[in-house]
Image 1 (tube, rainbow, N blue to C red):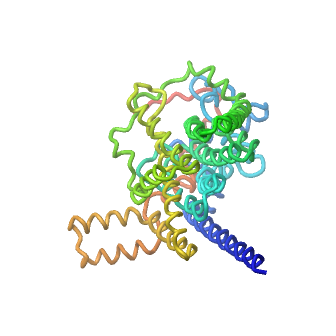
Image 2 (cartoon, rainbow, N blue to C red; image 1 turned 90 degrees about the vertical axis):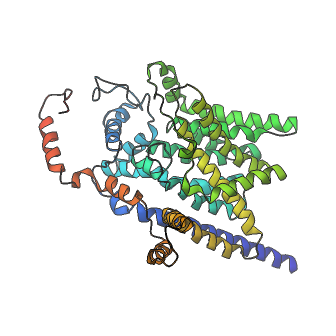
Image 3 (cartoon, rainbow, N blue to C red; image 1 turned 135 degrees about the horizontal axis):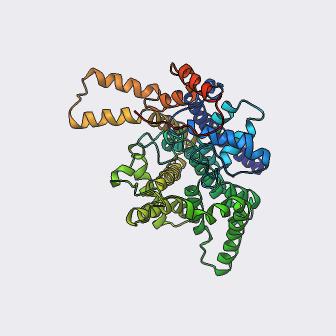
Length: 458
């Protein structure tokens, strides 16, 4: 009787944990949908914004020529004097957009593909923490905390955040989310022999989305084979290399062709960060102490899971430092920093989960942390501006603007530029006042024979 009651209580406890997880995930995606409004994503208009609009052509060429000829890369005469399309760029998201366009509008399918990586990251973060075996509420916290990377507005081209995605780096966002998922799956396989095929398939997809995300995924997953027992080390190393080899073979049809022709590619040039503070975003300020606490906790009480978390944080920082100090022009240092930011957020989720579990009312503490987290995601710029003003004496507590600012903080209404960027991209180019003139020009070009357009800036 007592044993049955204990089992029932454990079942109730698990049910509450799953319910809290559901709330965290639901709030995360409700917030994302409030920014990426379905009415914009599902409008049949031409996407625009940064490089994004120019990416429509490769997706169209994938649909019209490459896929019907059972290809993922080839040659196109429509840019330059002809160029090797998708031999030096990442075809997977474009192929998905092309395939979807056989069922729904091409414009809508391309919009959905550009936003997919953003929506995949939170649930991938949740899955990663669960697959590695972190206890509740760490997975739920990681899901919500991932919003701090997505809504980091301090850069718009490095990759990984919404601004970069809208500027055209959506393949990077795909690769980043898939890398997070892979690192959870491969840990599960190496430790418990589960998810081999899933690990290999996801790994194969990563380089076809972005090369930086592959470097992060592979370098960060290597330490999971570390073991004091030689026999255990060999067994884990064999399992890890089995995934690496299988993933490589599945993607070799594209990656080997690209590697073989790298000599024909051009370098990025010496585009590097100018200051260390440039790569220390304000939105992560509350998380730095928590991540540092995780490091000290690991030194005090080492564990495989926490060590793995540290590896996904440290490896991109090491790559950043190496590239910054080297003379290479083929890799960009800042492209690795979004991965370090994710690692810091996951370490914070781990530490905060430990703290929450030390209290009796875990579910109450979790909900409070959820509310504070959403307040920080939506109002971090307002909170920091108000804090700095009060600290410096520029603003007094009696100032009416303080009361207004506090009301805004508790409103949970996002105060950054991302919503306007989303609106600009997905509202579409063909609803702008300049569209009729542009369409008239395009209609004229369509009456001419095939060939290149020569233009001159004046």
